[in-house]
Image (cartoon, rainbow, N blue to C red; front, side, top):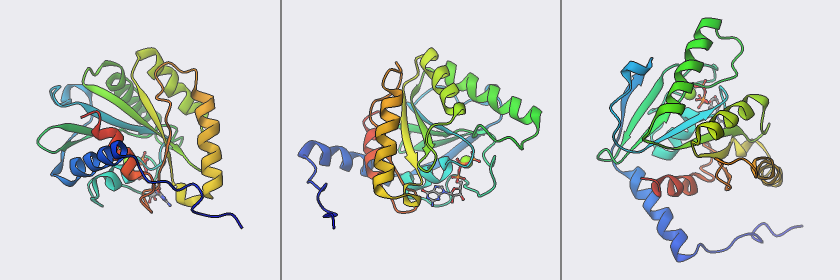
Length: 220
Ligand code: GTP
Ligand code: MG
C-alpha cells in the first residue's frame, strides 16, 4: 500500500503567510454589489477585479461560495445556465471585487440569450482595466473542452492573465486529478497569458480553497 502522507510537507513560512493573508481577506465583510445585464450597468472601475469564468455548471458560483465561506452568496444550481448576468461581489472595504460570469457552452439556452451572454462576457473580459485576473474553471472530471480553448484564445489575444482551476476534485481519485493537472499544465504551457500554476479544488470538501484564497489575496 502507498503511504498516503508521502506527499505531505509543511508549508514554508512564506506560504503560511500567504495562506493567512487569504484567510483574513475572505473572513471580513463580503456582499453582493450588483447584477449587470449589459455593459452600461457596469459599476465604475475601482477595486481590482477577479472574474470567474468557465463552462455552464462547472462550479463557478459554488467556488465563490466556498472561497467566501458563505453558502448562499452566489446562486448555485443543478440547472445549467443559472447565472445570466455579470454578478459583482464586494470584498472587504472595497479592496477587491469578485465577478461571477455567466457560463458558456450551454446548448439548450435560447439563441438570442446565448448571443447576449456571449457578447456581454466578451465585452467585459476585453475592455475592463481593473480586471486583474480571470480564474478559468475546468471540470476536474473532463479536462479542457474546445469552448475553453476558444476562451483562452480570446484572453491571450486581449492579454488578460488567466489561471486554470480544476473543479469537483472530490468526484475523481487524487491520482487522476494530479494527472489531469499535469496534462493541462503541459497543454497551456505556450499560452502567453496563462498563469503556469493550476490549482485543483473542491467546493464540497474545501480542497485547494486556501491556496486559491492566497493566490487571490496576493492580487488585492
Ligand atoms: P452556471 O451559473 O450555470 O454557469 O453554473 P456554475 O458554473 O455557477 O455552477 P454551480 O456552482 O451552480 O454548480 C453546478 C452544480 O455542480 C451544482 O449542482 C453544484 O452543487 C455542483 N458542484 C459545484 N462544485 C462542486 C464540487 O466541488 N463538488 C461537487 N461534487 N459538486 C459541485
Ligand atoms: Mg453560476
